[in-house]
Length: 295
Image (tube, rainbow, N blue to C red; front, side, top):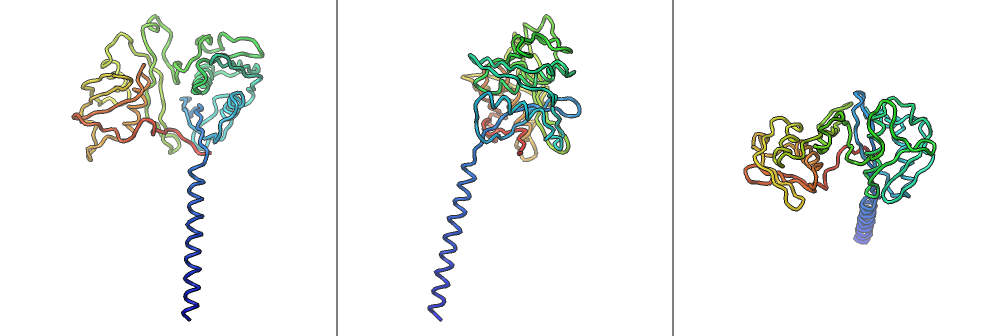
């Protein structure tokens, strides 16, 4: 009897050890899962452009990546999330070329046929220049350079990330006295929450405090800025305590929106939020992951 109990005990120990090893391998497997996030742009039923992040799992050659992004942006795979393709399914890439961080994409003539030219320009530019190896986008149709698209007054000679998304500003004399910034707001679409940027322009001659207050007023009207300073890429803002919740903490979504919006200011690499002299940030900027959709 004692011998039988001993055998059973040994079996239990062995099974426990095997299970532990299996779980450890499974955990390690999850840790080693390749993560390569790419930002692409879709639109909702209000025709508002929404940047989303999708895990492509592994990096490929740039030409293949460009084609993969455009193919995905033509798909209807995200309609259940309330997101619709900006690009026509008939739009095809004929060739891709990169030189000195200038990406040239040569399309078929379907680039002319879409009525939402501004949406296409913004979506393509935002997506392609999100890559650190691309500074500027150039569009061609059947090998010929394109200066303008129908229904759009945006010149295509200098498409950079500064163009932004949902840019409703009209060209005017003030264009050369202003700088573009991306102001984010939260939007619920099909019960999913998204952070949506709008490109606006602020007076470059204004003080830093005035620029910051202008941006914050768009994020949430009740935010009252007390002070702002920028040193070595770190923007520190002091705001009134009226934004604190009952638990004396700042709402996580509001924190994200503030950081994302203020990070679009020139020379700002990170944002510190202080209330009553204390830093109220709950996570690092590098940890902000928004509009991530698992496919």
